[in-house]
Image (cartoon, rainbow, N blue to C red; front, top):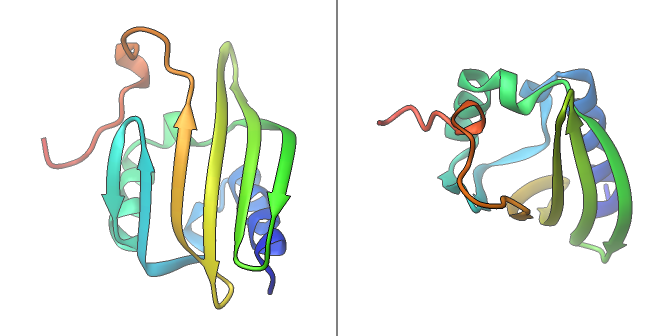
Length: 121
């Protein structure tokens, strides 16, 4: 499966809330302004612990650039009155996402209700 199809699946699964089926490699790494999460299991645990922040978004896709094994997506994630402008690089190998590097517009301090529970604090 090419990278563009993998990313389409990624967004479909986020929309449906079926995040446990995300096409992630076992060594998946997600880097964002919130920090870096290493490992598929750890990432899915983090999403599970923070479902109210990760799920029930609507996505407005603005741009997609893709090659065989990587995709850059610029979009707006909308959840009730919360909007997040995002640009992400997704790196894919053998039909699985190995790495996401995400850039968000987080002006000022992150609101307390939007902070991620990293489970180890």
